[in-house]
Length: 222
Image (cartoon, rainbow, N blue to C red; front, side):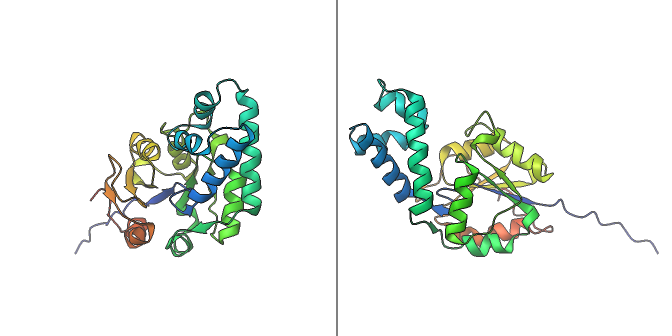
């Protein structure tokens, strides 16, 4: 009598965006940009409207073209660092359960922010930190480039096709798709173009994310 060898399913990994996905930082971001606009005597609502859809350097070029962009960025960083120290942050419902359940070696953070701010925000909200954090300083090309997500997969020892990206923003979704990964969208009323699955909230997605992460899981692109 012979028995067939059963090949184990590939290990699965989950790569999370941070702001807007795990941590609700909308009020913090608005407050920081309002203070930044005040430094330059600019209309805060207009500055924030532009900042929502562009990178900081592009925002400076549009709303303060006569100002030194290096100085503008330094002021923004100063305000962001102060907000991490003194601002109030909230983790989205389900984030603590989700990150606390996933094996530490099976997930990573991929953020357009800087690692020291991420660590500060996680400390304020009580969320656990993974071994791998890919931040703005780790790559020359940020989202929507696939580079940040590909680097996270490399550091985890994962193949892109075995990775699930959890995102809330179009640029992050595009980055994950270009990296050849499964991409699920959360925390938006309407699905971002291209996502394989859409959830109105992170909490709603928790059971499915955990199912994907199980070695025997095959939630994939359903």
